[in-house]
Length: 282
Image (cartoon, rainbow, N blue to C red; front, side, top):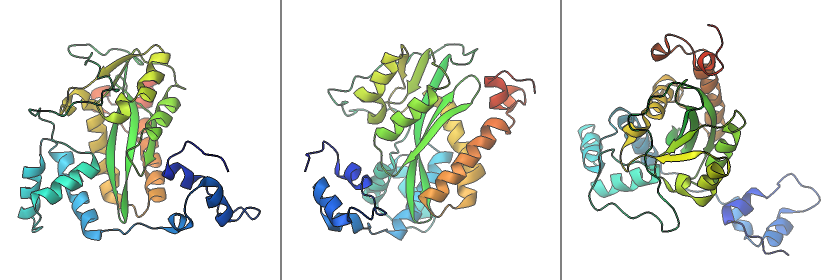
């Protein structure tokens, strides 16, 4: 038996239920986890899922709503919730209002925060600035998180990945996929722990990319990805009501194909992001 330096979640992913030579009992013994955890299915709180969907829809429209206003909004729509309940749900969703707040929590001492480099910068070419962001995706019986990497000049979505938890791994996967297209001069993100991690910033620095980070609570510093989320949700997610993670992933893959190759953008003189990024004639 080896002492693998893996999280419990990562060990669960190594379980091969189709392996006829090594039983599940033997696999969990080798990995050092309990058999019951393999078969555990978390209890889904249907009402919390409904509240999260409503919070997500309202936050997409009004990202300046904090927990007080969101609580008032839900109560006006006949959902008698208290603020602590809403705060917990928004925290699980990774949401906060965009206005700056006093007494901000200090970042992790091992996570360096980089300055915002894009104020008054004219974006006039592809691969000048890329940006990444994470959003919450509601599902009929659950939820997932989505990260996307976008070229600011063309609005082309270079890569995306989904996850059922707010870990760093799926953000690294998206970054690795995006770097297959080339390298930007500047890479912009918010100050989320996934993006301030040594693994993520290290990959950027290893590729000679300047790192830029939004001010805390300032989604307008990353306005193009915020517009991407609004388009995705109102043109696809809220209309399709995806049942499962796999169905949601398939639908989002299809939408981004449409967004890149077929969706006309007024700001791009009615060209598609792919036409602008790859400089194709429309």
